[in-house]
Amino acid sequence: MKRVLVTGAAGFIGSAFVRLLLDKRPDLRITSLDVLTGAAGLLANLDGLGAASHRLVQGDVCNRALLDSLLADEDIDTIVHFAAESHVDRSIDGPGAFVRTNVQGTWTLLDAARQRWLRSGHDGAGCRFHQVSTDEVFGDRQHIGDATEDSPFRPRSPYAASKAAADHLVRSYQHTYGLPVSITFACNNLGPRQHPEKLVPLVILRALAGQTLPLYGDGTAVRRWIHVDDHCRAVLAVLDAGQAGRAYAVGPLAGTSNLDLVQRLCARLDQIRPAAAPHADLIRFVKDRPGHDQVYRTSADRLRTELGWRPRLDLDQALDLTLAWYLDHPDWIRKATARPAWSQWLSTWYGDERD
Ligand code: TYD
Image (cartoon, rainbow, N blue to C red):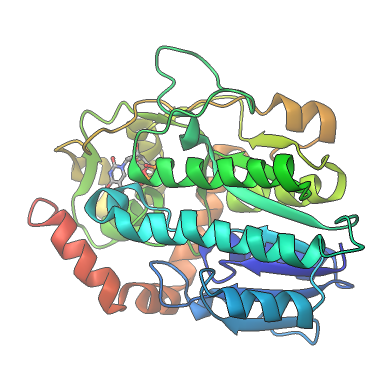
């Protein structure tokens, strides 16, 4: 890995990955690609990441001509593909954007990589296409136990279906053309710079504003959570030592109900802002998400045993760091929430129920 293209680099996880690379691999040449007008790609997420070895390109993963020239001009040998529409609620509201970015975008990128890396006289040695995916492709695990990387895909939301379709394409390019690929299936992430439409920042910001905290259904849905930096370290471990053609699930050993997660956040907020305690009084059970998956559960044994990865932060540490970051970054919050696309979506989706 010498010359890396990171797609979705201005998103929550992509920008954390660029930060990790600049810190741990200063010798790499990094090209960041982001459309910057999508749901969560925000230029401010790359603040402070200017470096001679880092170039930012504004562009769409569906733009084949742009991809062809980037791969050739930068002589890219590694693609880490974060670019995706990722919010389940948005995918219910408007699935088309998910099919376009997640399916067509991944295919366009795969095909550009195939053309560049497997051109005549080249067999793709030293190259890698890494697909960043999600445990949601394995569907609701409430009655069937942990998924492994080899479990059949059973996606149930348009978002999960679009990621599963993209992952199938990734695997097909390895199998059919010999493109060197790898995949990570991550659990839910939390940490700095996560878009305020996602549960953790939504709860933090609404609680600080004294607004109600909406929990879908009865709050018993279970997710596994890791800090975004632990996820990024896992992706780097796979790039460094993971086998081409292999997939790795990323996550902790246990899950947490949404209610438990929100109560933990409320308890921390009580300590920081005792005058507004108890923040848990703001919790409201609201109409459930259509088709809401109750449990995601994927075993990360392979990553632990083969690559020695462990999350460095437990959930409480991750929550503390995340809360501290949001409290310290009002400017970022202003930028992230001021964007018209976001405000418009929020009002149509949430309606009056939230306020
Ligand atoms: P989310 O962050 O949207 O991630 P995902 O659905 O991809 O796991 O939501 C995490 C969980 O929190 C999920 O079970 C849905 C639930 N949730 C709420 O209860 N209220 C909310 O306002 C949001 C955004 C999510």
